[in-house]
Image (cartoon, rainbow, N blue to C red; front, side, top):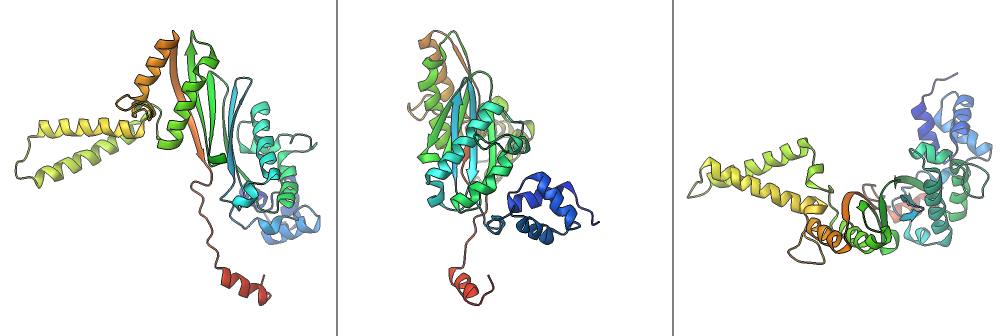
Length: 311
């Protein structure tokens, strides 16, 4: 029997949207040959949607939702905006989000093993049926959850961007900070910060940024008619680091609704007005399709290939 690895099983599952156990059986029956394994699954009627698996799923939508104090954000991808806008796809995205909210899976593998609502079988086993119904390749790409604190969700442009902001609130009713949470979510959606707070910037990133700014300052100084002493250059670099925080850290950014006020200052003002404390812990921002290489089809070549019978 040809040998195969867990990575082979994972690859076959991604190619076919078929459950892990069936992929193992297929690879065993085909002695590890990937093409024969796909054929085996097709012959068994398990991979009717396998022909769609080679298509890049870079469209889709993000869903962000909070229920019973639990926050979840999920990205599911398909091939076209047309499919993403269909009721069937929206139903699938909602169902997957509800699974994440209720089952709280640890990772994607655990999510795929969860029972799909009303189907009597796992998410992994149900996806091929959804592919056939929707007519496109579908991938559950990623998800994140918050189980503590106060979480506020936000969806931008019908699911193009989804955001969750998580806060610790003291002495204030959770519903009283909903507006603040929405404002923070919109800030995250629009400005796409890398970090929540300057304290979250890791040492390696700080060291690299300081190195870049120091090199830039030294080069500028060398080209200047009036060179500055080293201590002045170091102060310039520190000033530029503050600018880096303002551009990359949510709490240090200028609040988009109030010029000259940082997000940190706005949060403190709201907390004071409400008579309690608010700490912004973190956020999650998903933009659908980000980082996925989109396929550019040569339509003429595709038509020619179909006429020639090569597809």
